[in-house]
Image (cartoon, rainbow, N blue to C red; front, side, top):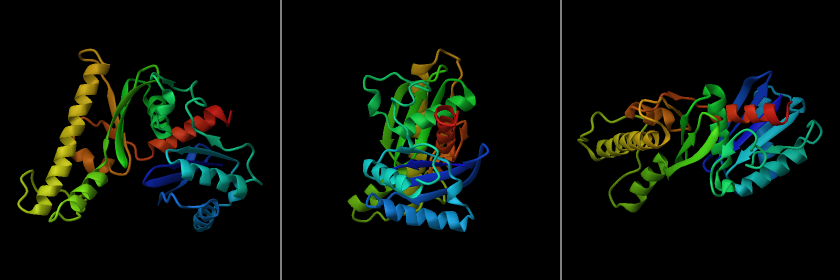
Length: 265
């Protein structure tokens, strides 16, 4: 059994893999002030509730875009899992996985670990040209060739950030929940108009970016698969025409693939 950890700006998603199956997973808020011991207390409780014996965890892989939490997680794992680990924690970094994905950028170390993990996951599943969209705190587009080369991508503010900005920077616009979609594009109330602007607007923006990226990545008529993941993917997907499928655990799958190829050989 091994533990996979994906530390994002808003949430930390973790899972336990046993015999090539995801046995358990959790999604918690990323608190930059968390200490190693606080993380240990939280996960000891989660393991206990799930009936998991942490002494059976033999390996850990960590991907993080939050440096302070990366340090806290490494200290947590080294302090509280020392007795059972068969090797040190594997921390995803571009230099550690360059045999799994080729980063075609001027400065490969600029790329967030989660973006490379998603690219590796999607390519290993589909083995074709891909656009991977992660709907997180930011929305990222990652472009992967049929040879598993990372070409780069686009970054734009996430849906939650935009909603927060609307409510905080205007006098009369409220905080809203977009989980319930608008009745039409033309909103008849302020809330309906905000929902329409966010969901139809982001949907159109996603489709426009996908069309532009596809034109740069492919020849006329050549297929390219568009895979989405992240907490907001299911909300925005009905308002787009270009997303082929959603995989909510794409990053965890990528961490599993990397662990099995780099550590559990």
